[in-house]
Amino acid sequence: MKLDPADYACPDHHTDLTSQVRDAIDEDDGTPLAYRRGLLPGTKAVPRPFEVIVTCPGLAGRQPHQLACAGTFTR
Image (cartoon, rainbow, N blue to C red; front, side, top):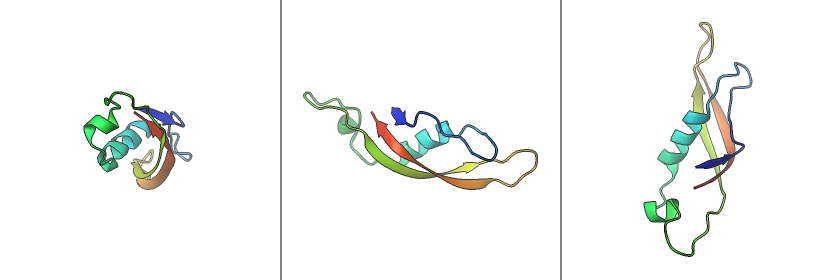
């Protein structure tokens, strides 16, 4: 999967959240596998918009908090 932007991080804690964003997209994407993977002949991968909520674990005893991450993805 290609994300745009390619990386997601908490602006307060600089924690990489990209893997959580990828996992959230996979959970939310209800497209059948053949379409999602672009396996049908003559189909082209088209960027699709997304917005997901992920959790930053915080740092040094600070409380976890949620962040909304948005962009586009292409499979």
